Length: 190
Image (cartoon, rainbow, N blue to C red; front, side, top):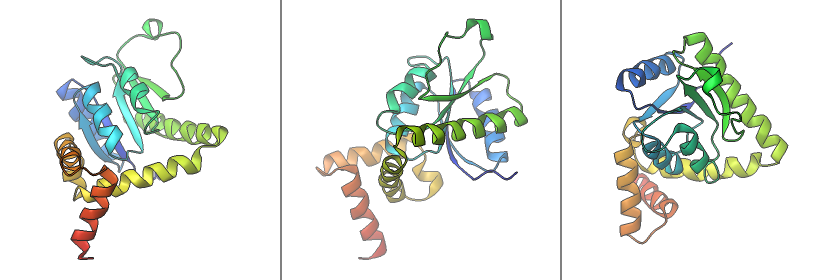
């Protein structure tokens, strides 16, 4: 079964684990942006549209669970939580939302594929139950306008590019959406 390509945000503080996970997700046909901390992941997820987050449970400063909980109200995105903990060491309750799937590291390709699919399916079922599907799609559309204004896919998917864009919007006394629309019009010659 072919998966729909997705924009995936990976938050993993261990460089080798991050590189390996990125390679796996890209091998599954998805576009990946990485963050080294929960704080960085939260900042990226608030301003760029992602279809799925894959967050490490334990990161310095802000855990993957805390980052997902911080972002979800403003930018609902399903999160697959990765943990190196044994099942007996996990919290008693993993909240849905924002966590829609949980995997124990190390993660093989088949488990990763299934976990990503499970997270996205559970997220869409949750949206339907909550009657929020259309609202989330509108919000994601606004974030996609902002992302498009940042340039090509690889460039716009970095924390530095996102933060520069937000700083520019603030400096120009514009909302990110207003700046994105203005930049898009400038590029198209309108």
